[in-house]
Amino acid sequence: MILCIETATGVCSAALCDENSVIMVEEDPPGLSHAAQLTVLIQRLLEKTATMATDLDAVAVSKGPGSYTGLRIGVSAAKGIAYGASVPLIGINTLTAMCFGYISLHQQQPSSDTLLCPMIDARRMEVYNALFSNDGVMIKETSADIIDETSYNRILETKKIIFFGTGAEKCRSAIKHPNALFEDGFTLSASYLHIPSVNALRNRHFEDVAYFEPYYLKEFIATIPRKLFL
Image 1 (cartoon, rainbow, N blue to C red):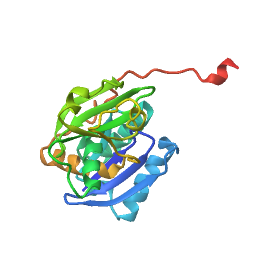
Image 2: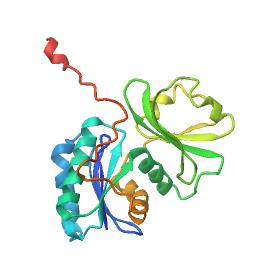
Image 3: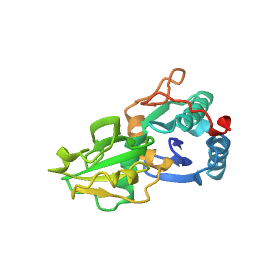
Image 4: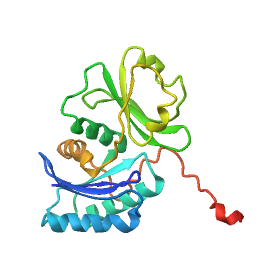
């Protein structure tokens, strides 16, 4: 039994999974405070499934890239539960979780000449992204890229790429190649951590609870609230 936590973007959700399936998902609408909602979601999830923290085999968390604040909240909660229940902690790349989420949502697997490109908005025309084969193998490492009309052109000459996630919509106007396909309305869910977290549990790919930190990819840049200038 694995408790999965997703807070990397505006979506705050928790899921309980076993080896074969997602048992239940609890999720709050985007825009609500992750700090206020996450522990409530987790408590509700465990109560509805009559599960104790000590019943868990592991706690999995979406480790980033994504929102600096959201990642800190999710990782802190995951570390606390894993430590308190004396179970392993699993960190899953958020883009990997998105890829497996996309695959799980589509009954027909993309063709072998099609790549998957999950994107997370990183402000302006920059996105966090990675490329995966049609069966979920990462073939281009996670990076933060500024997107323009030349992005992905070399790959798009021979492959189709499906772009999806919070960063994909703003790239639609820049990436015009006919082999570029865009999936609308894709949002993250803790349930997407199911397959990669089960694989990590089987292979004992665990994080050090004491020292594990989110995968920010970029340094946090604090901004001054506009009202201070008034």
